Length: 427
Image (cartoon, rainbow, N blue to C red):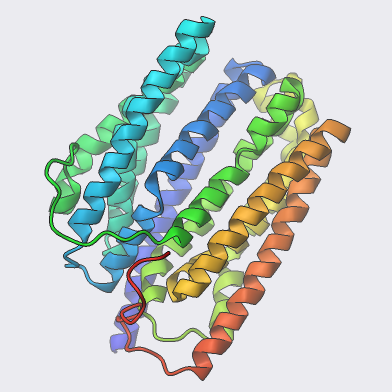
């Protein structure tokens, strides 16, 4: 009966997380289409590049501490170190927002390019978005996945509405995007503050609370590698704005596909962290079934890719074959994401390996994208990054098998106490 209740609880949380991710993915796709309709391919590539850069800031300044807080919370909901970890993380996030603002204003004054002025409001987005994202991570860890839906709606629905209005009134689409994105993050903060745990509410960190803060750089390397991989749009755009525009739209369209598979990974992470052992069979079943949704969506998208020019204009006709190739890449990314989640939750050694692997794959990803784009264009770049992604997924899975075999041989720690005997800091 206990196991039955646990199973029902898991699938209930998975249902909420899955439906929230579906809504978020749908809204994100609408935003991408609206941006593409309002911008020429080269301008869309610049906006997509700016989006990648601001997301890179989020990863760089986090140092893996959000995942660290999730892990600590999964082990002990009342861990006394959590407020101190939050305090350190919050100082990093506020500093990054200030630096973003100064960089945008400085670049605008030096170049006079209005794009930099339009990106300045995202400094406010950095302040609020990162905080609400942490709240969502804690909600998943605590088994309150139903709180994700309103957060995603407040963050993305205003962007859709404002972009529709901007296109109808022939207003500047870039300004509309940045201001509505910022407004959505503020609304998500105001509506979600009451549900957040007390120590994670402050906008300003204040005095440092008591507690030990250690950095698990394996978490950070993994996040950094994932974000670095998304810099392929930036690299290709630098080589050729036209090629970048043809690559950027499919690359942004396939990314929401992974939100669905990520829902399962987010719900599973705290449970895997508490589980004493995981068998190879459990690993295989979990990754295959977890990848099935993104595989289905990718297949449907690839089949209907020919309709894309009708949605965003004939200027994007050449993106159809690129989109079909990147659909295959999206499946590999979804599979790898599940394997990475498993490795992060099992052992410190597996976590470090995962971080280094993803950093290596990300570097190879960028090099392959740059070389292929410069030699043969957007389609070649798509095939290059797909090949690198598949290779990285295979390596990660074999490392996961090694982890399962090791756990079956070694005496397992008590369930709910994983990591208790491991060192608290990493050299």
